[in-house]
Length: 423
Image (tube, rainbow, N blue to C red):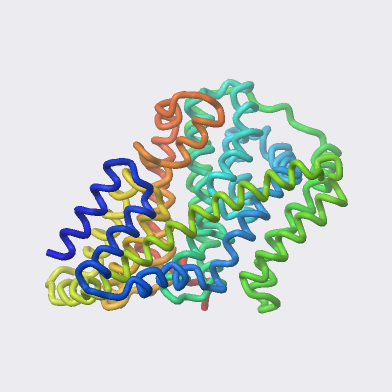
């Protein structure tokens, strides 16, 4: 009965338009304070407990590094090199979009920032070459989600903090799955290109390619420095995030002083503060709600119930992942993680699944949720940026969404992709 009342309160506040973090907070607080009789101080203290984490400090720094890379102009140099390198090949521009999202995802960790930064440069070029609006925006919307698999990933940080996994290990686990998904998207784009038969971009000279490589090299080195430092144990992920900010500021000042102005720096800080605030508020509300569920032993009861079933573990795993996909049609990815992980994680561990592998396929499901209508965030970010109907973006995303789903199924049944770099 307590669970039912808590869910009714949560859904009621969502229906009237309350923010998700507030709905979670009121629902969890009602259970803890109203039904279980915990002191109000204990309820309020959950907000501090939720955010008092060294791991979570990496989130605002990585977000700031990505925003600075975009606003100070260094991202454009990197994207220019990629389009020069592969843009003239069959399916070259969609492939350039995917590769750009891979690299920019390794700089930012934010899918929204990746979609805007890559889309602003690639989509206009694709339209000039004869690609439709649907295909141009569909490939960017889907590829933009790679920033959540390719490290540094905000979702990987959140998952690690909630399950007590090592962030560095989760980062390494996401590299091969991210590259595999990127390869699947590129193959899909090339196949679709043969049906459309657009014009090819004029092949740049070797001199132009080399010049763009030199211009983009400082940006291209950032993922190597950050991930290499983490993997070699030189610094922690949180320290790496802070170093990323300093590195971007340094290379921007040296190589692109024209855009290194106060206005652009302030713009990056404001955007990072807004995104971090949303993430932390969601985390606070979710921790309060999940704490209430743990007090009434919901995760333990679910784990016991599932363990006693005669259903194969792989079928239960598929059911959980299917639930993620359904949630993704109505909620953003971060709330899904915050709400479900405390409940399903003990069950997954009890079934004997590798927590790192489960984390990777969970993030893959969150990637799907970002391009799943009606509330896929990547769809709306791209639609708003280019001022086109969201249905246009959805239609273009469908074939790539299918490809992303098929790639996720492969990741589920081939754990090697997730664990080969972590052993």
